[in-house]
Length: 328
Length: 256
Image 1 (cartoon, each protein chain N blue to C red):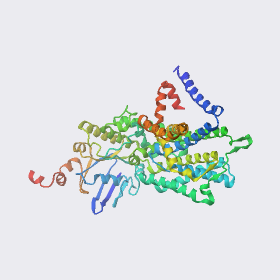
Image 2 (cartoon, rainbow over the protein chains, first blue to last red):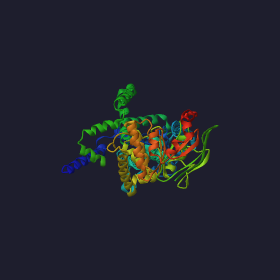
Image 3 (cartoon, one colour):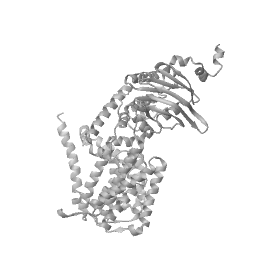
Image 4 (cartoon, rainbow over the protein chains, first blue to last red):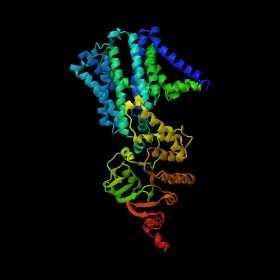
């Protein structure tokens, strides 16, 4: 394989260029555009985690935003009441979201299907009502202001600055997506596919549908909690409208239009559908019309999602480069 | 190996199975036959944990199976296929055939992220085994095709590979040759016969009598949920009650 070394070099070059672009972004753009990229990265974690639940296990969870909100409130309250920084708040958010998912799952994952979908919607609404009405704890509709980003004191880094927070969120998003991909591709992930494709057959060959549905639900909530914590400490303010169904809708668009049954798809979906609606603001009142048109065209021409466009683009690359990229 | 003991299932007032008992021995091919509605599929559901019997017991190698969920029954070594073809339609044949390997090993989320040696070894072995099983059922070379895109007969062969991946000691096949043309049915027959060499017992429900007579060591005949005969193919074919169940009473008189 004389060309192998050269191809490996090319693949590394592509990855290195990508990484360099990600690192260089704050040097080139700032302000509002950087803000959008930070939001896109947070949504990428959220969409990828929902992509595992819907795309791999086929569990149509319409309450995923609840775990995002639980994570945001957990982290925010720990910071505001006890002065616990985001470093620990992030872990606590992930942990509490997972525990809530486990409890909800224990109630509803034995009967999946339609009832599951409805219960997840109701769960998100209940969480919203709690955030809204438990005024002593959450200040209700007034929300919680003053949730500061973390610092690394001995290095003198304060993530209050947008560019620093960008790097922080990119690193965490990368780690989360990397972990989600590993889970998706592991034998545990095969079990998720069995739940999606044919749980009766899965059961008959020893793949417990309940166990795998529970695993995917808890993992999804874990990463949603992380995204929630990042959101709270970035925006510095949260309110009960975090739990609104409209967030679920845009999340579903990211996951489905990004590409079901992949992790990269929802990540691409999160980038595109965070940025596109914002940049469509130039069209003022026609913004949502254009957005709707884009969705319809997308469903008609790239039914498997944006990941399909990406794959088509990759196919233009030499086979050996593709293979190396797939490997690492 | 398998002991079915006085199993009864009633739906409301209707008895789908009444007091059915039989055994299946090691490396034996046993068949359950009977007219439609005789309770054959219900019997399969009871054995594999999809339905709880109203009364009676089922044991495999001395372990009770009643009250266990299907994936637990599979772990005990009893795996079934379905009357209505069941595959994982959106997965490739390779992915389908390696699924059953999950039966005997569990991985946590942490295992999946850490990718330790146990997991990597498992992936490799499950992959090798999936290829071997696809070859065994005659679907070698089609690993990358989607299961949903296979012809009906091929899907039925794939079902056997999917079941075998769980490493069963008893495989229950629910009408594996239904809807197959004679060539395909013959292929299925020789496949079932080969299972014996792998020391896998088979319990078969099948309407294709040529196939049943050809490969069964023993035949159990159900009629309206009651076992009316049991024995070798020759014995059963000449049993008066069996002939009556299939052809109606009066047949013997007309012949005589």
